[in-house]
Image 1 (spheres, rainbow, N blue to C red):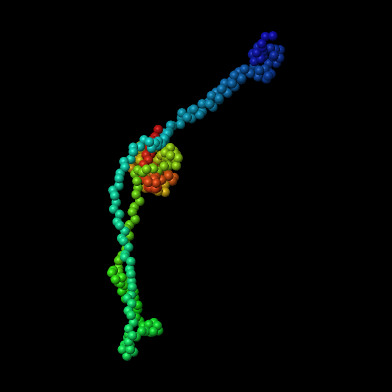
Image 2: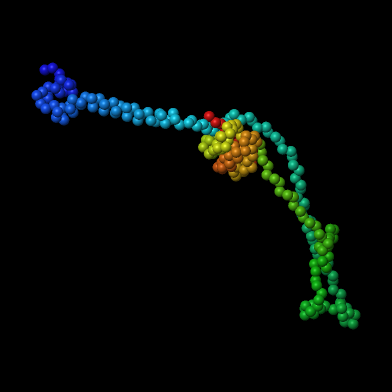
Length: 271
């Protein structure tokens, strides 16, 4: 049996041979191929438009500048010059005053007759002493150590102490300060927390900001300063990030924790 195309016009004529072709079924079957083709075309067009919409949106959207913050690795830095600080003269602390040896010379009592003793020389009773207005002062007692005796009342020596020496900050030590995790973690921290200032982006500002700071004995970052400036906004952002650094492992000199200067470059770059 030959293959029959059920959608062909000949098959439609064969089915409705001798029947009322004005009936709606005849028209539907006769126009079926045309409707199928039109429907398929519409589906294909809709599919193509649907898949093309993302591409059209991407093409129509204006391109924006990509911002990339580049951080220079510490290995690219020049070795800092070691400057030997001038020896500071420390004023010696004033020696303590000499020890005082106060003594009262003992006078042996002299026995006299009653008629030879004057009234003012007689010993006063406790009641008489309390009623008198005479004041007893330590200045009335003369000390004597037979060699360097001094009157306590005349001793007016002022003892002064020298001002405490300022904390020394080293440029280079035996064991330099270390960021937790090493230099790679330091660069990662800066890259993640650094925000490119919007004004600097609009002005197309690019370049490097070099910051210098001190890592104290306790590992805290302090005294942040910009050694090489780029832009006020970039400088401010670089200082903010450096101040936010967590506690470091402090540097050591002769086995003791000391304060050390540290330099880090931060690069602002637009791509």
